[in-house]
Amino acid sequence: MVHYEARGTELTPDQLEAGRLLFAGQCDFIAAANNMPALPPVTVPEVCFAGRSNVGKSSLVNALTGRKTLARTSQTPGRTRQLIFFDLAHRLQLVDLPGYGYASAPKTDIMAWTNLTRKFLAGRTSLKRVFLLIDSRRGIGKADQEIMRLLDDTAVSWGAVLTKVDKLKPAEFEKVCKATEIAIATHVAAFPELFVTSSERGDGVAHLRGHLAMFAEN
Ligand SMILES: Nc1nc2c(ncn2[C@@H]2O[C@H](COP(=O)(O)OP(=O)(O)OP(=O)(O)O)[C@@H](O)[C@H]2O)c(=O)[nH]1
Ligand SMILES: [Mg+2]
Image 1: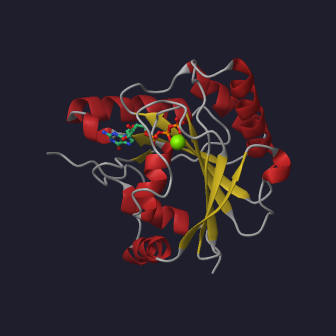
Image 2 (image 1 turned 60 degrees about the horizontal axis):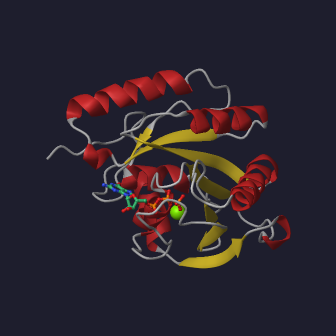
């Protein structure tokens, strides 16, 4: 079985160790918000995970933290309906966002989640980076492009993460990586490195932890 690893810059052993330590430490659920007043106060730096419904956001939070049931996951799209905040040792907060592009939810619900997510992405001062998850079997879709434009417009730094790479053969992996790298290169607010992950198998997870640790407070 081929495991896929990071495409961009390799991290040093110290950076990887910093990531391992951060994610091996304390991790607590803090809040679930479905409106702006319910957002927890701005304290430590935050990173969030955005993307289509079912792309694997909650699974990635679980894989990173090594806690299988911390964030609720589901085979049915639309599982996460609130902004879910987790705190890592008061050094970094992870935010698991509701997915977009989920057609079978009631329209008013979709509007409410979308508005809240957009407001959060555009206005949260503690938000250091948005990780935009893309299903590696589907590539970038229309809804993803819309969010990319929003992030560019609001100058929020974002990085692309391919999910579920365990499902790909090497040639398919190369193809989707190249296409995604070309697409993100056209976006002004995009971090140039493409992250590749499998929450199921663990590919790219240690690398992403090391990368995320750079945002943490000491
Ligand atoms: N094979 C494989 N399946 C995965 C991976 N990550 C997630 N899944 C599956 O994809 C489905 C959706 O995962 P979630 O983590 O709930 O997705 P989500 O993006 O949080 O979805 P919403 O909360 O609905 O927006 C589940 O059935 C997961 O088991 C992965 O790396 N590999
Ligand atoms: Mg979810």
